[in-house]
Length: 246
Ligand code: PGA
Image (cartoon, rainbow, N blue to C red):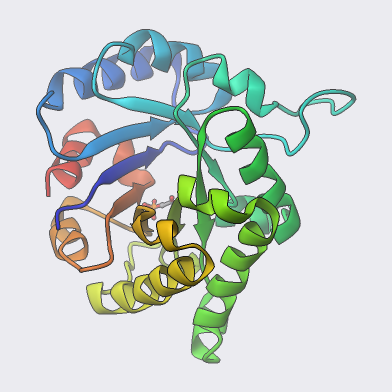
């Protein structure tokens, strides 16, 4: 089955001028009748810009993080309800950079997934093991544990999420997981989702980590890979569209 969804994660990149061009090219470059959905997750200050540029098109947009709290004394945080006001369909939660650099725990990631759902958006829940964890044979247990933490918080609503497997060792390194490596973990995640909730078997499972136009087709051809979460390559429209069309 061709992938269902390809999402760009701009990370902390962009400026008004470049975003204008990128968003316009994206809108113009993705066919209305395309089978696959595409979306871009942009920094908070550019949500209005993404909304203005993409509203009425088939390209969706979203944020890269939200607070686990709904409102209140949390200086510098952004609530899911605020993000939703800009028409976001998606919110990435639990990206490995947030877990590693900003101390996000499994419990926080689960609370953020819950907050996104409460605000009417679809959380893209990221899970992934480090190289050391993989080498020690614990890779699958790590991602299953990360998934279970979210399920323990949101229960059956796991069926309303998107799950992204992003091995930490493959992110921004140019060293993608092989299709076989990725498929093996996706199969484990698919089974786990089904075990938790039958309807969750059809949750889109995205692979992320050094996806490029050159390796996307082989990855997306795998039985349990439904698309991708694309970092660096999403900043180049031609490359991103080539991945999305792979
Ligand atoms: P990458 O990042 O495609 O640049 O490896 C993926 C991600 O962090 O979502």
